[in-house]
Amino acid sequence: MDSKKLFGTNGIRGLANKELTPETTAKIATAIGTFFNKKNLLVGHDARTSGPMLAKAVIAGLTATGCNVFFAGMAPTPALQFAVKNHCMAGGVIITASHNPPEYNGIKVIWKDGIEISHEQEADIEKIYYENKIVLAEWNKLGTTYEMPVVNGEYVQAVKKHVNTSQIAEKHYHVVIDAANSVGGLTAPQLLRELGCRVTSINANIDGTFSGRLPEPRPENLTVLAATVKAVGADLGVAFDGDADRSIFVDEKGQVYMGDKTFAVVEKYFLIENPGAQIVTPVSSSTLIKETAETYRGEIVWTKVGSVTVSQKMKEINAKLGGEENGGVFYGPHQAVRDGAMTTALILEIMAKTGKKLSKLIAEQPQYFIEKGSVECPEDKKEKLLEKLHEQVKGANVSTVDGVKIWFEDGSAILIRPSGTENVYRLYAEAKSHEKALKLVKDYSAMLRKILTAI
Image 1: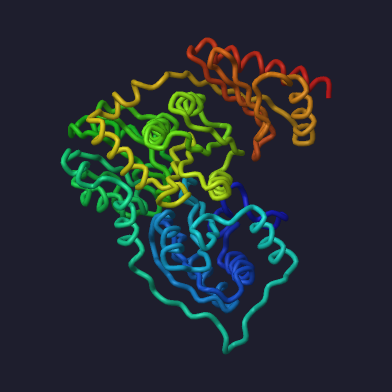
Image 2: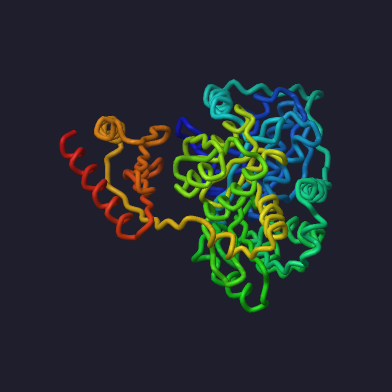
C-alpha cells in the first residue's frame, strides 16, 4: 500500500496481512477518521476470514481520532449502506473485497447518504494519509464503540417497501439462492421467505474461504446453481457476489444470464411506468440497454466504468435507475447503489406482474452476440494511442466518456479502452451475429496495432 494512490475504482483492495495488515489498516482508518472529524460512523464487514481482524483495526483507528463507531458486524454491503442513511450517520467504513478471491480484503468508505464517497473525497483521505495530516484525539476525547445488531433485519424490511409483496406472494415462487458462503445468506433467504417464496439455499453457510465457489458470480462458477434450479424444478435461481451488492440470475431451464440481460428487463418495466426517465450506465454496457431505452422512451446517461461513478452520477442528476453488465442494479427509490437483494425483489415483481417466466422475459429482448479482444500496449503509449484513435473515428456515432465507443447503424457497437491494471487495450464488440462481432474485434485490433507502430 505504499504507492501514492490508496483507492482503486472501487475502494481500497489488497492481500490480507500482506498489503492490508492490521497496522496499515489502522493507519488508513486514522486518515478516514480525521477526514470525518469526530463524527458517528458505522462499521461492518463481509464473511472473509480477515474481516473481524481488520474491523478491529478500523475501529481502533477511527476511535483514536475521536469518531464514535457503531459496529454492525457481518452484513451485506447494501445493508450497511442503507443503515448509514437510515440511522443518520456521518458515514461508514465497510471491510470487503467484494468479488475478489478469499485472500483479499478491502475498505469502502461511505458518505452520509449511503453512497460511496466521490473520487475527490478519496483524494482528500489520501492526502491526509500520505502527508501525515492525521489528527489523533486526546486521551479523554477518544471515540466510543457501540454494537448495532439490527442492520440486516431493518434492511430486509426496507427492500420490501419497494415492491408489491402480495402480488409476489400469490405466485408462491420457488427460488434457489447461491449465497457464495457469504453475507447474501444473512438477508436474501429471509427476504424471499417474507415475500412468500419457497427458498432452497446452496453455499449458504458462512465460510470466509469461499469453499462452495469463488465469490465472482460468473457463469462458469454457477454450474451447481444452474443444475440445482433444474433438479428441484425452481422458478428462478440467483447468485450473489462476496458482499451481495450484485446478483446474477438463472432461469427455470438452468440458463445463466449476464447482468445486462436482467438489467434490461428491469429497465423496460421501469420505463413503462416512468417514460422519459434517465437511465445511468457505463459505456461498457450492452447496446441492449441503449435499444431498450430508445424503445421505451428513456434517456441513457453514459458514464465511465465503475460503480462509484454510476452512483455519483445518479445522485448528481437525481436519476432513479442505473445498472452495469456485471449484475449491479442501482434502484434509486431504495438507494442509488448496487443492491443484489433489491434487484432480486424487482425481478420477482416483474415476473408476478406479467405472469411470465424469466426465460420468456429475456427471449422478448433483442439478441446480441459479444466478442472480446485485447492488444498489447506499453503504459507510456496508452494516452497517445487514445488521442490518435479519437482522430480516426471522428464523425461516427461515438462516445469518448471512457476510451472510445462506436455505435453503427446496423445496431452493432465496439468499446475500445485502456486497461487500468494491465499493459493492454481491451476491445468489446457486440452485434446481431457472431461473425460481425468477431470482424469488429479483428478490424479494430488491426487499426490499434497500425496506430501503435506509428507512435
